[in-house]
Every structure is written in C-alpha cells, then in structure tokens.
Image (cartoon, rainbow, N blue to C red; front, top):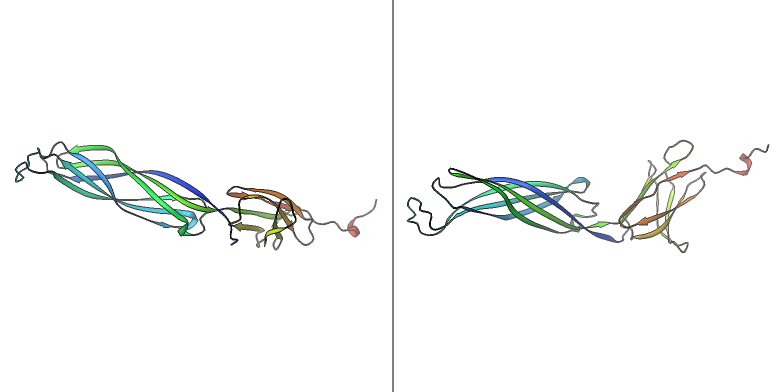
Length: 226
C-alpha cells in the first residue's frame, strides 16, 4: 500500500432498543434513567463496524412511596440490563486503529407502566470518528474485445511535470488500485504492449475511479494503401 494521506470521517447512526424493569407492584411515581455500562466494537469484513452496547436501566421511586417493609424511608431503586448490537457501514479503513473515537448518547423514548413491570423503548445515538485513506482505482480493458488488459503499467503523474509519483500494474482482471494516495489532482497514464497509451485526469478528494479503454496500436506495416 502506498503511504499517503487520510481524511477524517464522521458516521452517525441512531438505533432503538427495548427493555423492561421489574418493580414492586405497589410502586408509583417511578422515573426511568438509562446509562451505558459498556460499549465494545470490532471491524468486520467490507468495512462494517460492529458495536455492542450494554445499557443499564434504573427505575427510581421517590421516598414518599410506601412499600411493605420499607417504612417509607429512602429512595426505591430497581434496575435491569439491556444488550443491543448494531452494524455500521464505514468508508474504507486501512486499519482498525484508524477508529479514533466512538461517542454515544442514550435516551428514553417511551415507557409503559404495568403492575410489577415497566416496559421501555429507548434510543442510542452513536457517532464514529475515523480516518479513511484516499484511494484511486479503476479497470483497463481493450476496445476491440472488451476483455481486461493484464500487466498494463499505470502511472500517477504530477499535473505540471513529468514526475511519476505512484506506479503499479493491472491485475489479471484489468483492475488497479492505489491506497493511501495523497488528495489532489493528477494525471493518470496507462501503457501496455501493442496498445496506444492513454492519459486521463483524476481528482481525489477521498476516492476516484478512472477506467481506461485501450485501442490496439496500428503499425505502419499494418496500414494498407488504397
């Protein structure tokens, strides 16, 4: 992989979660409070981030609530845990360490009181900050057959000079890729045996795809005079 720049990205997602708290049947005036106990993550294939959260629900009743054996003293608190998992698709990642931060905010959307149980619908807002490498890719094919051109030389050149900044060759399927290339504007040149060279412009903010269709080179001896 070519070393180069990366762009800071932020991806947000809101998920709904459902839970319940078992309380004393005689309880009243209950307030519900959520808290994120733990938040873990891992990067899966195709730049998918798995986030697992454990949310603790507190059902708090005021001291005035008179429960058997409590003598009306102190707060009455009941709690339960809710586990939830979500998957977030990110832009391309070079390494899992490029995840800079995962921030969260938890809240309550709706509560339903039933004797001995409180059902809760809540929300969890997740904000992922990460670095995504700038990338340039494409495919080289032949005009006459539409088949991929393998082994073609692909060069990324400075716009003003002939300096070759990056270079690679196409794979068996005609594809090429530069990962971690610096953002900017470039000339992309393709050369292959028996084909005319081609050059196109690439404008890279984060990702650009530049495809090439090559024509076979016509030698002088192949030209038939009328």
